[in-house]
Length: 241
Image (cartoon, rainbow, N blue to C red):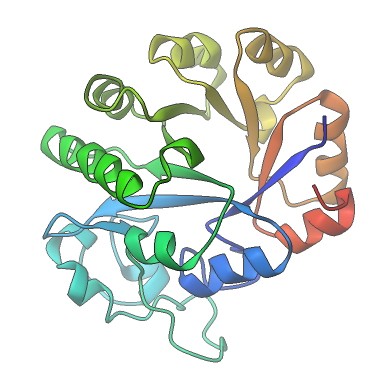
């Protein structure tokens, strides 16, 4: 089976991460699968941003949860790429669903409070239903609370466990929450672990893979997909999948 390619936060290495421009760059490169990060605004909207704070991507102080969606959408998130030609506001997930046609979305939910976890899972369920995307998304997290809440409140949404440490026994952790996807950090992606997860019926996605040699190695290992900051480079290295 051909290796599938996911753009990491859109095309993080080629455009300001987790912005509409980044996801458009991913699609323009010929990659129609993406991974992104979700956090909750003050008024309960799903915002596409990795950090809990604004400093790294916008240069501004404060946290995502302290501001409304409207306020966040007025903030320029191209701090890491100041020479990018135009402003790149923090988008809502609804905006991306409306403007970007991806074949599949890995939607990572960051650890948060119990109340926020419930709100995020319910909002994601409602939004994916509104756009008819239930079969095109996988809710991913390294948080057991988030995966357990999703399993309870929205069992029809596919779940994925993000594994960064081997001592947690990634495969058993994923099975505990009925996950159909296992997202392995690159250094954990041994052929043995990949094949063991696949034998349990899981799709194995490996992150973050930016070197062509690493990409080709994962093909040889039999991984199902990789997540990369450079979707254009991945296409050039592996061919259009």
